[in-house]
Length: 317
Image (cartoon, rainbow, N blue to C red; front, side):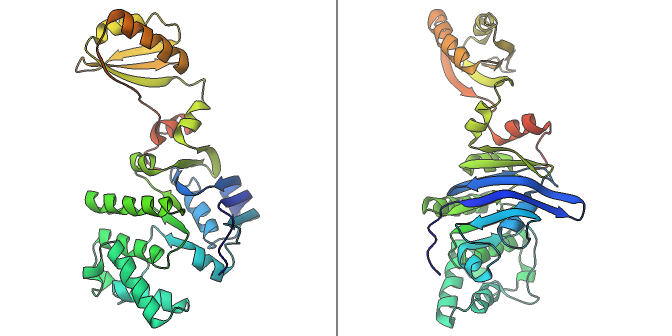
């Protein structure tokens, strides 16, 4: 297959309806290289978007392009995309090795290349020792990892991962996240849908937030957050004299709330004007000689931004 020159995944005015039921509506996105997190509650349109991207669904309206190719050209798509779904669907009686090897053979690879790629993928997800065991006897975490190996085995440019961290213990989760970062660092796309919001926030270069079939925000977290000036931001300050600092902060008309933390070693502040707040905070610290340990935004993450945008706690995303 010709190496694609395009570097983005494009959705142009894409809508998908299931009869009268809305899947996604008027979605226009340009997803660059790197790690993109999809965030949204059940029914928000995440899986519909992934299925359109991987050619499993066709849009009712609009167009989808994966690095310049249509996702409805199977041969092109297999060379570009690896898809790890959230659902288990394995051929009955297959071992981990047979599952990957048979897939590669079906797509035309010879025996030697199929064997080499299969073993390499199983090694990358730490399943080589269990490769000859039947998948039916795998734990939840092992089944998740063999699905990830299936998505990786043909070295695709684009990894599409629907809830890829489910069922993984902390060590396996860290190893898998490292794989995602490596893939992105090498110029690939990693598109992740996950319920584990703090991990999506931690590993994503950008996020796409969906609700009710619509994109409600996109971009990096700080960029999305800066577009909500009417919503007070929260700042956490750890210091040695929180009561004294609190009295100074209450003099600022843009500060709407100050809470002293239960250990009496910090403050949580809500302000409508972040730039002015930081400027005047520095002045207040210098004038009072308060010893400050840290000053950090307390809500520039996926969870808090999503909560504000859709009025949800984001926990079911």
